[in-house]
Image (tube, rainbow, N blue to C red; front, side, top):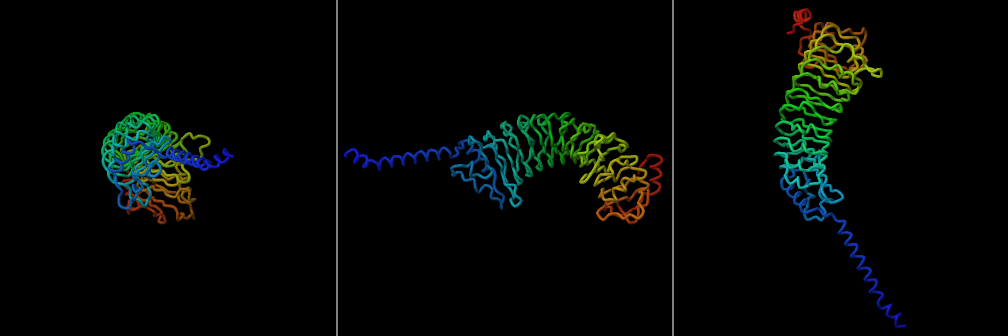
Length: 424
């Protein structure tokens, strides 16, 4: 009887003890699940924020409350790995209605030692790229685009073994491209366009790049030997010169733009052997020679061009007859060259059946465009034949303003160029 009474008396205490133990364990588990970002990384984030500010209309930093228990889950743009270390930092939102950030990049970024991706969205960030970023050997992506960054590309970037993507486009960077960048073993995408970079490229690019964009800089010298992996290449609007021989081995190209430089010599015939190369921009150089008259095509290769294709060879010194193999191109600019003879019927047919939607042949020395009788030019087609050695048909007048108002060349120019090879 006594034992039974005592057991009943202490039963509430027993359940209370169980409740307390459960509560304590739950609290410990909750604490353990809470992110424990290190003091060093927390200080680094604070220094990064101190160097940047929201442009009016942006609210990116509104969530960066340093009294919050878990910056990994509450800070916009901060992503942490399983060990509560910052691995991805996106500064800005990239949304169309957000004006971005202003200020500068803090060297404290290098204290986020596990960082694999650093993304700075468009804004008004100025100053240099901290060279200390080259210490972060886990980097895979560095994207600092559309701001006002100045100074050189840090040579320390040449030591990043896992870097896959480097995009520093649309800034005000100066100096030459560190040669070590062109040797990085993991680099696939390099976009340095729209800066003020100078100097020559290394003779050989050994990085197995897929995408290389250097347009709108002040880079000089010849094209380097490039890896056969390249699919996108743009060096337009630079000061580069020399032949295009380095392009011969690039059989996987989809997009090529070397326009607005000082390249010279013939166009490599191999460019037209590649059916995947549907965007080809060679305009405004000093290219010479003629178009390939015959190319040994792969048996499965039907014709060059196709829907969405564009070829611009304008404003060069290409001579001879226009050969038929470009007749399947949708948008074709051959104007402002030294072409002679009659336009092949393949082009005429392609224009009138709507396959070719733009054909500019103005400012050459062409003598004939064989119009099909009774055919009407489709409304969707732009065909310009002005300032050649013929009188263009009256119904064909879809020329840009740059073609001028004269329908034909003076006869003297035509006879001198045709018979003596001179040009005016």
